[in-house]
Length: 480
Image (cartoon, rainbow, N blue to C red; front, top):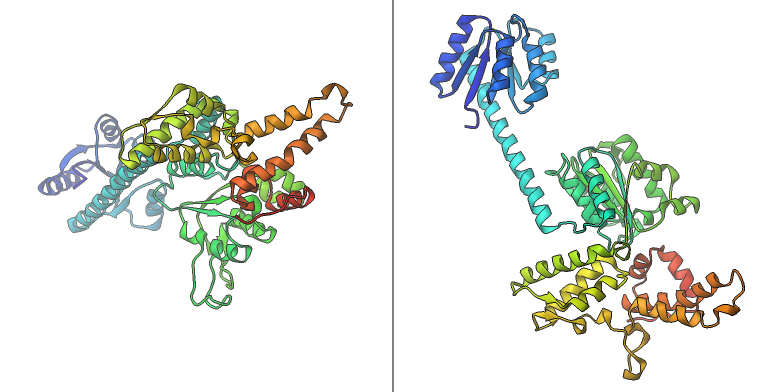
């Protein structure tokens, strides 16, 4: 049993004697207090699993004692005894945090049943506490967020402040910066951590399916709806829903998300019943939502509802001091997954990895490290193991896509400024954009195997914007 030590507080000596005798026969350690003041001193100085308190005692009453105990021993289970049957005392006792209450006179069997129930509740509480610790430890070990730069330290502080609450969080950052990791960190450091964490990528699911996925549907709601299906909000009840790429969500669905935030209820597609849901919403985007609001592509009221606590993740190129830590982390992780000896990276190669701009951010870095570890037979990794660092050359038959993005942009800039002295005021910006934009988009389209959704995510622009630029710049779309 998880309940071992019990304190009984009652001003009637006969009641103290009966209860202590009965409880000790059951194997419990029992301490007795004659009034509320004595009980308060004992609870402050000793550790108890259960307190049985009379409601009317000299000095501090049972209800007042209960309230005081909850302030410094919130885990202590308290059973209130009262000689006055009626709703008022029962309601007041439960309101102040009592586990249960007894009306005098009572059979000892009733007391036994309450203690047995309290023991199960305490055991469950201990199990949940242990599970929470295990979940946190597992999360930190398997999905640790790496970075010691000042921007990342600020992110950690924000997570620590916001996680215990139920406030809505909006995470903004380029694709690959780890927005979902931040969302999971918020969930696993909150009171909801034993409940579901459900992630939805709003850009990856067709508009006609997204509503059904989020809100569920009733049988017969549309062709193929052969049975009732709960949506993600219902599945995550009590937990957290992570809405990734919310900037791509259609306007009509945005109105329904707003309703969830305001009313805490949803209606399934094809249904009429309002269903209450208890979820925390964490949203993320790689777009400028305020700009989308101005363009009337995103609801202003929803933006302000989401942006209660903003977290901005900087791209890796703006926190280069974290690159070496991430490289070491991904090296250890990959070698452990492959069950091979730990590999090292030569110093000059590491310096080049730190200097590289990483347009795909942390996700790209992880993939590059994995590829090098898997394909290289050597224990020491060099620049040859990282094609992303190779500038390539036309004489060897390599194309422009073999250039690193940094080298490609640098080459275009140098070409632009050959006659910099002859440029008129106001010409530089447009010239640079014209010189860089087309090869940049071609570069990313080729790197993503002409996947426009991925290319747009890396660029941090809307897919429709990318399509317009492809047409305006006369880029011939190829199929890989």
